[in-house]
Image 1: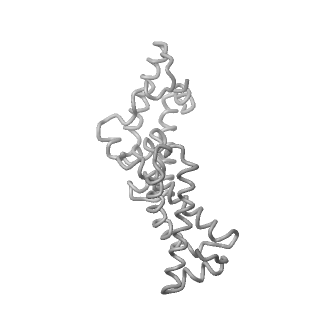
Image 2: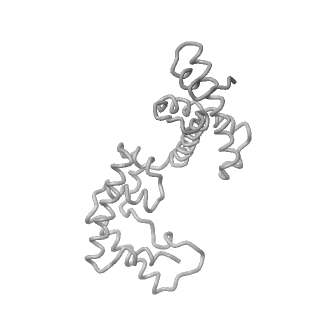
Image 3: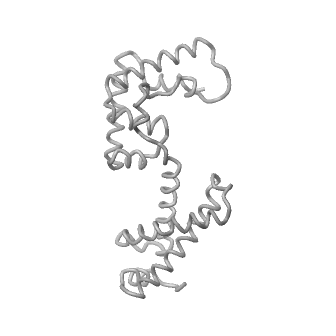
Length: 217
């Protein structure tokens, strides 16, 4: 691979013909190497994969990362080596791709399609210690009130967003993509849903802190 200064990288990638093609190939090779390092050294959830499988993943992700770098060339400010900046972009692409793969079977429609959007109270409490009957009954009662509040004051879209992000832990970008919106709009949707939920629960004499503490060990 040809060694380049920051200025040379920018000039070659924005040129045409063989000069650009060579720079693109060099860039993709560097990004593949950076992504492979991330997958093999930083991702404990991928330790079961072979070197061949990780290499194939890195190759696929490096193609997407190269396109992302090209789309964002104007955002490079020269505060670091160009290759360092490009590798950071590539790792973000890898993280995003891995998240998408993890939630590829997730569907927002499933959250509200079967009635109750909240899981049973027993599944919201970690640990293996059995609950005393009084606390178990209180949890079930409060959970029913929360579910009724969700149904009464939140739109289906607000319910889906709030439960997906706050309860199921689905990343914002995955939910935003399924809702065909952007992160900022989704954040506002969830903020409004939380505000409505808090106001309605407080009108019933319940605070969100109380509700959350009730489901902690």
